[in-house]
Length: 351
Image (cartoon, rainbow, N blue to C red):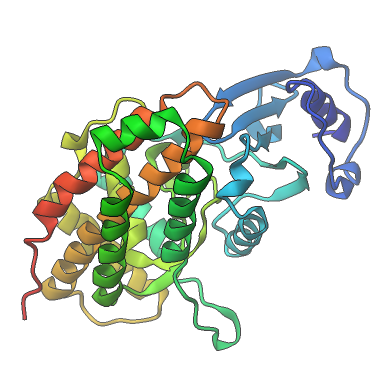
């Protein structure tokens, strides 16, 4: 796409002052195209704004421009996001990143269909998902570096933000009344860290935000690709999977009856382990014990996912300009945390 087209599109987005590192696009600029020769597609997620720019009926020239949500730098490490984006691109797991600017970035469009909670239950589709996730999880670190999970640092950061920056907000009073207060949640966070850290889940490069709409299915090519790497970093393998299972419930109208049952999970996890071992160069058979152990880890780490996104939603309640009921979402996630905790604590490893 000509650079002039992208620049015009950006100037049309709420007249924001965007500053580009533009050489990658300028080097391919050809002619100046009139604004009447291209269209824009606006879509809103619940963190950022996304603009698709194109000049013809073909999707081959689409460029995506993502504009960061208000104050998202408080809880998203944008420098780390770019590092994850580049690593994933180098391994064929992300589209090409064209350029960055102060409050966003521009990258190649991934053609396909964004999935929903029905699609991700389809065995022919979820087997593609397990392979793609296993591929990302098997990406090796450089020079023998041993990564550490970022989960606890992030949770503690979010927790501190909620009870310092938001301490005088009226909505926090409602949250405390409907869910719980500072002391009990602090105890829960400490319990999770002690208990989940001992589950021995491998620390791998994770997506950490694998909701259905972040999975793009290209039926023609028979493949899936993941998008949006804002939370991509090293984390527990079981957390990434448990977070994905939680997202079966949806976002706008959350329905936890859609959380995958044990039978589906075991099938999903076996497919994942087969792909993970293949990418790791291992040829030993997958045992029922391995699948069952991962099942228990995943469902326990799903608790941390509820806690994480519950805190995230409370922060968004104060700062986000996007039309979404973040407080209601926070309450729903914490209610599910406490409901699920009583159930998954009954799970035990079989010797």
